[in-house]
Length: 350
Ligand SMILES: Cc1cc2nc3c(=O)[nH]c(=O)nc-3n(C[C@H](O)[C@H](O)[C@H](O)COP(=O)(O)O)c2cc1C
Image 1: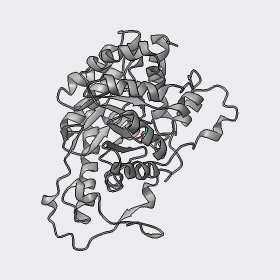
Image 2: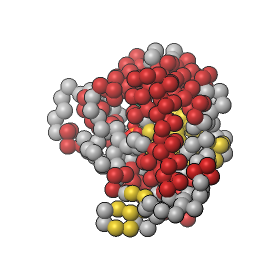
Image 3: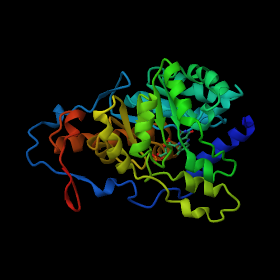
Image 4: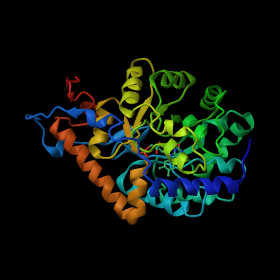
């Protein structure tokens, strides 16, 4: 079912507003990051100037292993946001995703709001975005190229959001045929396909099914940061008993650990996100097995508070914290950080 551009435009705007206006975070510590600490090394045997946190991701060099997660596009003010996020990505040498481009399947009215990211970030690793329910139909799949070309995307993110569709007042909770749709796109597209949740997490079983379908990367987007069931509950007039789903989801740390075990079986890149709120959380994602980390709402908040300058400051602070974790664990590069010793309140993790 195709919805009108007007309905999609007002929803995209309402999502940004709800995310800035209400408390839509999961309960503190649900992500699991607070339960894990690095084992401090009193003898790191490196200088801080030896630490290098750059990585190769989807064939491109990133100065920091980080992605500005997919957020917006499709309404007037999104032009400014996407341009600002892309400027910050350029300045810090990181990747970025635009928000759902579903509207472009039926209308070009707001194409510029997405295009603004490529204009402002001509050299960044930029990822297109479409929801899983949209790629079930062959007709829609045939139009995906248009979404990719509109921003000269380096990859296509397919977002999985069944919990959001279930709670969303105008949601379409129809997921039959999604996996097959993903498989078709992986075979037909000449750019990498990335599967991503939206803050409810992908468990190990589903990561394995996505990898079998041929995706090049998985972004777990786990529970612990923005709760999209909370966001959609704010948009409902009648909540009924749906409040029970406010904390629904798989914690980010569990998702990363489960996905990382599949690295011995499949070749893929893993993104750790959902509740990442500091450079230390970025370091924990990498130590648990992610190739890069990502975040959405904290970055949007920084941008809305103080524009590109404030967002760049936040990203630089997170980079400094990541480098600090690397130095204090004796890790010269991200590869070494992956085997850094970790502990939880119950003792040594490894
Ligand atoms: C305002 C806003 C809009 C979002 N829109 C999209 C979207 O269009 N497509 C998508 O894949 N994810 C979308 N997300 C989900 C984020 O990419 C991310 O997976 C989720 O918010 C969890 O990350 P966080 O805890 O760092 O916010 C959006 C997030 C925010 C804050």
